[in-house]
Length: 230
Ligand code: ZN
Image (tube, rainbow, N blue to C red):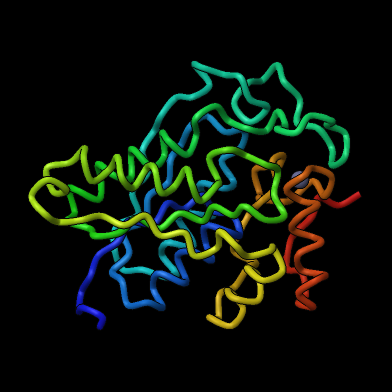
């Protein structure tokens, strides 16, 4: 049975997956506290998109927390000296766009925020399908984090259990797009590209653009992505 006014924190990146996650959380009757992490990613377009999406779907303040991961580097997304490869260019199992420990850092931040607002769940749009093989997108990782979270917080030891909810974990990109589409979400608001420009226009060449493009094709839904012209 569903409770009234249950609260959740939704990690929102401004991309397709996390936005769908927010649409799902809202549809499940949660009051959604959206949280974006400004971690030194290469463009501000996705942070701008997050804010627009949060405004469109919630009436709560959209929270942005700065965590300077470019001080640590080690990823094409945070280190200016590492290029973002085009799709198919990278040979490794785990590509250079993997950000070391990103979801652990994000979920830990969301955990702190969840405790402050009294949320009983954190929604994160990780998916283990159709993706680049990031270790912190797997179900066993999420389960382990949830166990840790309930040991780590005042709320947890006092009996308010926290759930980490991953509605997309077993869905393909096309299934995610179909889900959001059914919920009436406008994907034109989202930015997925690793190389998007200031205006949020996508490169059309990177892994993320590739999976997104294929996803819309497979879903049979018109792709609203704005690509850099020429
Ligand atoms: Zn791209």
